[in-house]
Image 1 (cartoon, rainbow, N blue to C red):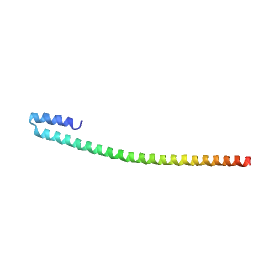
Image 2: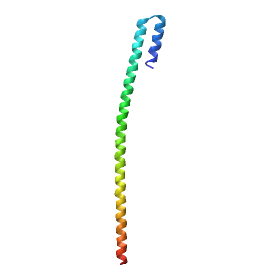
Image 3: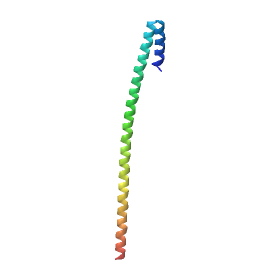
Image 4: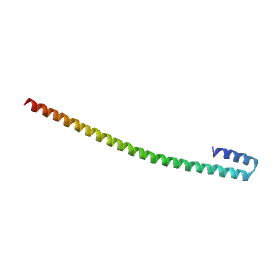
Length: 92
């Protein structure tokens, strides 16, 4: 919108032959375009950093989940082995 509105005013000024008004409107139009691009670039970079942080957190959570599951699996195996050994000794 910051580009289109001044462009309309510039075209109207061109039709009327008012070159200083047209030049001022064109400067405004191009300035808003550059500012818009700068804002877009800043937003893009911020989203990239945020995505990097989120991915790092997800990797850490996946690692901790796998570690917890492996620990629980090992504990279950050791308990099962102890129960089997107790049954063998009771039978003998």
